[in-house]
Length: 519
Image (cartoon, rainbow, N blue to C red):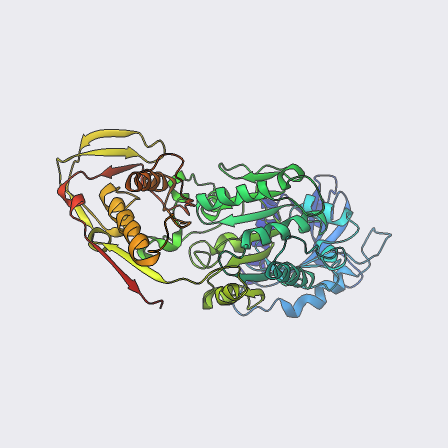
C-alpha cells in the first residue's frame, strides 16, 4: 500500500468512527446521512481530497497527505484554504468553507476560519457532523466570545491575588492560548478562583461544558462541595441552582451537565470502556512506584467525542498528568487550565510556560493570607521501617468501604511498609502514638502558654483513616463528640479489606519528636 493510500484508509476509518459517511463522486448521495464526506470533490482549482457536507450543505474540506515520517502539515494550509475558497460544482453560494483540515490519518490539524485569528491546532480525531452543524449555526465562535463578551470582573469578596488570576486567565483565553497555569499558594483560594472563572466562562463566554479534573476521589468530593457553596456576585442563587454539576461516579456523562467533576482515572475508564474499581480513584497515580504504572492507550470513543468539553480545569496539576494519564488530556479539544501551589519544571513545560498567575507562599504570608510555620517532625518506628503480621494471627479484617469488621486469622505472614499504613494495613497504636506526641509537643514545646487547643488541620489518607484519627484524637484529649478537628482527606487507595494488627508489634512503636529546619 502506498503512503497516499494508507493515509486515505486511515482518514476514512476515522471519519466513519466520528459518524461521517464516506462516499466517492460516482455514488454520491447527500441524503444518505447528516454528515457526508465526499472524496475527490471537483472544484474550479482541482479536486479536493475530501469535501464535508452536513445536512446537504458544504461546511469543510480535508487535505490528505502521505502518512510518512517528516510530513509537514503546516506547509499545506494554503492549499486547504484554496480549496475552501474555490467554486464548487453544483453550488450557487461560493462563500469560503469554514472548517479546514490537513491530515495524514495519523496526525490531524484543524482550523476554524470563523475564529478572530484562525490558527491551526492538532486534534486527536475528526469532529462529529452534529458538532460542525452546531458551530456553523452560531453567530460567533467560542474564541470570539472570549475575546469580546467577557465583562469586567467584580472585585468584591475577591482577594487581589484571585482578581489577578481570573483576569490573567481570561486574557490568555482571549488570545486562544491552549494551556494556562495558575500558581497560587495553598490557602489562597485556588478552587474558589477556578469556580469564579468557570462561572464567568459559562455565563459570559458561551462555554457549553467544563471538566473539573482531579486525581483522587476525595478531591472530587471537596470540589463538588465548593461548587455547591459558591454564590456568584451578580446572582442571589448558588452555582448549582444555576448550572448542572455532575460528579462522575459511573461511565455516563449527563448530557445536560455543564460542569463535570471527575478523577482522571475515571475519565480514562470512560474513554477506554474498561471498568474501574472505586479503589483506583483513592490514590494519586503520582504516589505509585514507577514499575506499577502500566502504559495506557486512549482510543476514540464516539460516545465521548473530542469536543465534549470546551475547557478542562486540572486541580493539583503537578501530580500525575505528565506520564500515565497525559493521554486523557491530549484526547479532548479543550483549553487546559492548571491549578497548583507547587509547580516544577515539568509543570511549566506542560503548560507552555504560560503562567497567568503566580502567587507564592512567601507573598501570601507577607499579605497576611497565610501565616509562617516551623516544621516539627514526628516519626514512628513503623512509619520508618514497617512491621510484620504473623500468619495464623487473629486480627480484624476491615472492609474498605463499609468499615465492617471480620475477626479472622491471617493466612500468611504479612510484611508491610510505612507507605502501606492506613491503606492496606491499619495500626491504631501507630496513630495513637503520633497523636500523643503531637499533643505533648503542642502543650509543652510549641504553645506552652496557651490553655486552649490551637486550631489544627489534620490531613488524612482516606475517609476511613480520617475516622480513625477523629476517634483517637477524642480519646487522647479526653473529649466527646463536640471536640472536632477539621480533617480534609485527599484520599489514597485502600484495598478491599484492611488488617488491624493487635500484636506487640503495634505497641512498640517509638517516636522521634524534634524540631527540624525547613528544607
